[in-house]
Length: 146
Image (cartoon, rainbow, N blue to C red):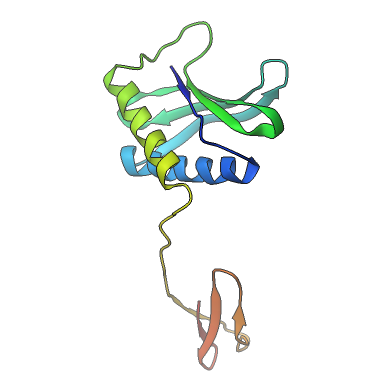
């Protein structure tokens, strides 16, 4: 099964889409896992084979990305070239297409979750530190909030 992707404009947009897609797959299917994650790029066919993806009760199948110039994603391929094991209108085909559609729509607006946890440092107190998406705040001696 092939899903054509038209709206990706540059490499950054491709990366945002791929992150959103894997998040949507996890939301749709719960646990997804790579039976064999072995990415390989084939320039002659402009395809990156990622490996075999295991999706819940459906088993595993080959996943690859088609790309245009500068590795901008133009399509997703589920199943192999010789034995297309997934039909687009099958139950699984529809369930794979839905998260891809949501990822295309939501790639620029990711859900950001906040988590605060107290961590103890047995040796010393850690100084305050701020990054783009995290901060470390001292709380008590040898304890800080991450």
